[in-house]
Length: 417
Image 1: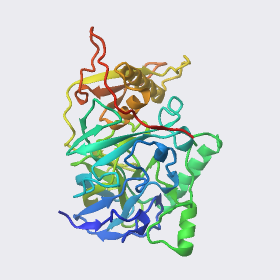
Image 2: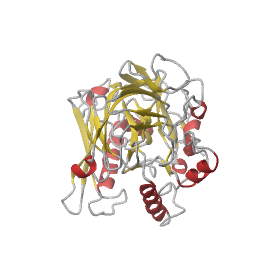
Image 3: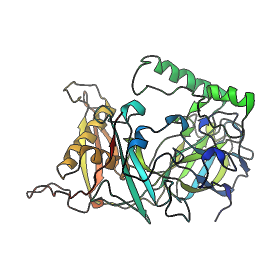
Image 4: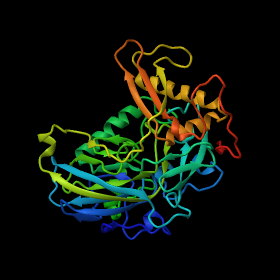
């Protein structure tokens, strides 16, 4: 096993650990460790809400989830010799749930969760159709996931970190804040908001204290969106075997990682759409000097996907076009088309006895494929989602005999404000 350079004690909260990570982006957060190019190491990760979500049959914890504390990130880790303009090469050698612990109160100890977030507290891709909080608990058996809240399905997890990235420079951080503030000010009362401005409340900034902490907390960026540094990209294919090339903006690069997922569908559409968990990730790092200029990577990471994905061969696909639910035509709106494809899949799955919320949770957690299929044929974009039929315990394909009706002992719990 590689050396653990960021250990976590499962009996302690994230801010009470031997080494303190962070939940905001800022160039002044000191690295918790420095490694040499070519190093291999292990990092422990806490799930993004630091144990606030529980293995039970209530969705109150999803409804009341404290967004001000996310994401609990391990790091930063400096790489010796890294300078702005380099590319930081990161290999994901292994990733999995909390090691040697298969039962316990933390997600990753034999279980994980998926949540539909309430519109008043984060929302999701289909928040106008699903404004209330719901939750599904998933049990792990090796690489397989099943849920008492969504019966009749089981699938192999595509375990991956939802969030990994390098620290921004002061200039890049300022650009993030200016452009996101400008967007939010176009509709400041929108629910959910258009962007999340800096929030000193509950900010964890590694070992920063005193006036340095106060100054950084006032401008440190929230970790919710993906940005030029990588960040919360939620790419399900960044699995074991992936190689990622991150732009370097500060000396050392200052790599951080967290938000581990046991599985996820393309888009993570419920906001907490993956199966969230804590666990470990083994990384190998190296440098490509002056790589940003050499390869034209001026912003955003590029990557080689992993080669350990489950091999599903049978799919049922649904399409959508850029027309709203009330019949308004939109011009090549690919996001709307993807929303409509998701809604068509949800409607279809309800014919087998699932509630719309169960179907929505399933699309967020299972390894569905999402694609923009046609983006040039005015006025309609076409988007599609592909559901692997092998994940169901029954035949989900249309047939003359009609849909099988599943038997349910318990459904996905709901909580409202």
